[in-house]
Length: 174
Image (cartoon, rainbow, N blue to C red; front, side, top):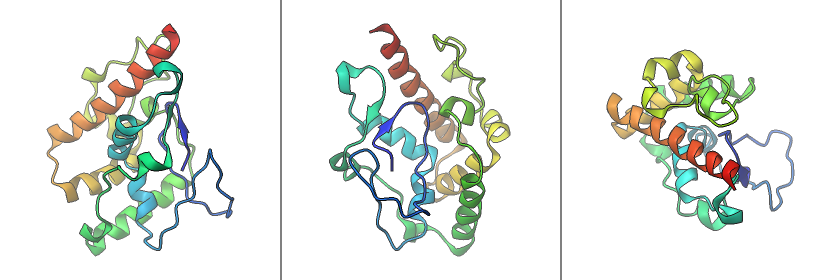
C-alpha cells in the first residue's frame, strides 16, 4: 500500500514480492479478499479521512502505519461465495488496467488546473458505472454487503470527490 496519495486510489497486490519500506507498506494476509476490499471507493474515503496532511495540509495525503490500524474495513467473512467470486474476478480485471485519478475513475474528465470542472454534486451513479464498470461492480458488491442504498452510495462517491478536490485545490493555493 502506498504511503503517499494524491488523486489515485489503488492498493496493488505485491505479485513481484517487492520489499516494503517507509513509502510502500507490505500487507501480509492469508485472506485473498483484503486487497480487493482495500481497492473499493469506500476505502478511498476512509484514507482521505484518516490520512495526514503534511506541509500544512497542502498536497498529498500520507497514510502512516498507525493510521491504517484505525481504518474500518469490511469483514471478509461477511461475503458469500458468489460475492467472493465476483470481487476476485473484478479485481483481476482492475489489476490489468491503468488506474486513473479518482476523478476519472468516477466519470469526470481529466481535471483542469483549478479543478473547476469537477462538481461533486453533479455526480451520478450512472456516470460512475459508465466510466469504470469494474470499479462500480467491485464497489457494488461491498456496498451490498454493507446494506447501502443508492443514495448512500452516491454520497460516498461525492464525498471522496469533494475531499480529494478540496485537498488538491488547497495545495495549489499555498
